Every structure is written in structure tokens, then in C-alpha cells.
View (spheres, each protein chain N blue to C red):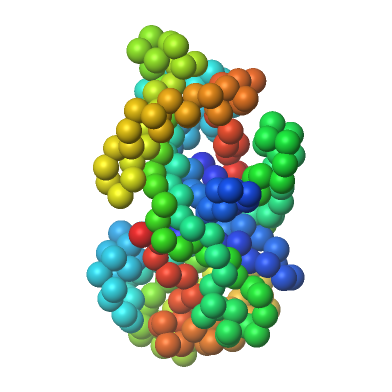
Length: 125
Length: 125
């Protein structure tokens, strides 16, 4: 587990960011750019109140992960993916890979995090 | 990873709920009560905006996990912890176990989730 986040605005999701051992080690040691072989996964669910918890507590208390939205991965291979900052991008909707048009949007957005090796997520200690 | 949540109100935290293999299996198969040996961990961090992400996007976009608050565990042993619904409760602040007074408050609150074997968190698929 690298961290968790709530994206507001159009996304309005709840997400967990997981990494393989190479990713976790790089995060903990502050190694940037991330080494080849790093894999970071982003799982997203809908974001909403827990009606059953709120009923128990009698107030707006809990916001929880609802229906799954999609899963994204970034994989570091500085040679293979040199054109996109060394990262390959993938998105799966309901287990099926998203199409090329979707994947073309990934790097455009991640470029804004260039100073952090194109990765938005920081490690939650 | 079982799920993630944002607790509002006095808590105002961001939390990840993790489980051992027994916990994950029970969640996926809808097995309740949870079998002996189930361990569920709750990691909590402060909840707040990501100033650096928001600057990039020019709007209130990201809410992220900040400083760690504490870690809690529940362990199922229906004989050893019979007096508290079969669950043993533990909290660690900065690596050190919390005192008895804190632990006395755990079951009082979890009793309100008795219909779900005293566990608030549902599995995020």
C-alpha cells in the first residue's frame, strides 16, 4: 500500500495506490526517478457516504468505497517507454483493457507531475 | 486490502483497512461470523487537500493521506475474547501500544455493528 486518496471534481472517486516491492522500496528510500521494474497500481471506486454507518452514529460520519470504477497501472521501463517519461500506462475496465484513445490521455496529464518522475502519489508513512 | 474510508466529524481521518489471508477469504466468501485467526488492521492518517496536486490542476482536486495517526488491529479468537464478541482490540500510537483506558472504548463502539459481527468495514470489490 503506497497511499489512498479521494479525487474530487469530475472524478469524484476513492482510490488506493498499491506498488510492487520495487515501488515500495523506492518510495521508502526516496529514490527518484523510479527504477525500471517499478509497477504502481491505482484502484478506484465510487466515493460516497456509508448510510449504514451514518445511521449507527446518527450523523454524516463515514465515506466509503462503493462500486469499482476501473484499475490503472504504470510500469517503468525507461527504454521501452522512453517517449512517455519511461512509464507505460494501462487501464482496465471490468477486467478488459481500455482502448488506445483512453491510453493516449494518460501521459498528457501525468506530464504535469514531471518534477516527481510523472507520479502524483506520495508515500503515506 | 479490504477497503478505504474517510471518517468525518471528530475523527476527520483517512484510513486503509487491511486483512490477513483469513480475513480476505472470509470477506470474499461472505463468511460471517469471521473465523478464528482473522486479523483486520486499520491504518489512519490525517485527511487533507494535496496542495501540490491542486496547484497543478488549478482547482480543489485531490484529498490525500497526511501524517499518520495510529494503527488499530482486531483479532478474532472466539474463546479468548468471548466477552467482547470474540474480538481482541489493539491500538498502537507511534509504534507503542495504547493504554487500557483506550482499549476499553473499542468494544463499546463496535457493539453498534453487532449485526455484522462487530465489524464496520465492508469489502471493496
